[in-house]
Amino acid sequence: MFSPPSIRAFADKLGSYRILDRLGIWVSTACAVHCAALPLLLTVAGLGWLGDERLEWSIIGLSFLIAGIRLSYSYLRQHRRTDSMLLFALGAGSILFAKSELLEFALAEPVFMTVGGLMIAGAHWRNHRMCGCGIAHS
Image 1 (spheres, rainbow, N blue to C red):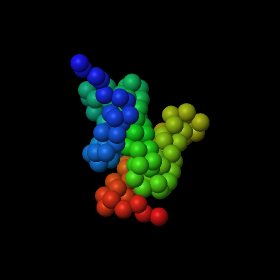
Image 2: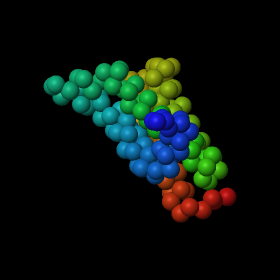
Image 3: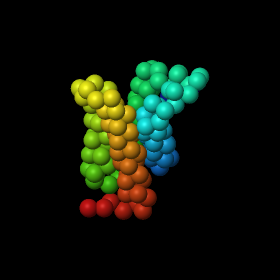
Image 4: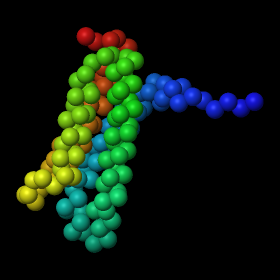
C-alpha cells in the first residue's frame, strides 16, 4: 500500500541538501539584479513585463520561502548560529520596507530592494559556509 511521505520527512530531505543555499543565493541575487536594473530595462522596448508587480512578488515570495526553509533547518539541525537568520531578517525587512512606499524619493524602492536581495543572498552564502564543514561553530 502507498503511504505518502510525512511533511517532516519532506522538509528533512529538502533541508539536508546544500543546494537550497545555492538556489537561494541565485534567486536572491536575481531579485537584487532585477531591482537594480529595472529602471534601465523599462526604458528598453518590449521589457515592460519585468516591472509587473506579480513578477516582483513572485521573486520575493520564492526568495523568502527558500530562505525560510533552508535557514531555519540549518539553525535548528546543524549550527545553531543566528547570524544567517539575522541577515535574512534584515534583508527581508529592507525588501518589505521598500514595498511599503514609506519613503518618498524616486530611488528608494530599487535601493532598498537591491540591498535586501543582496542581504538574503549573503545569508545563504554565510549559511552555506557554516554548514560546509559539518562542525557546529560556536
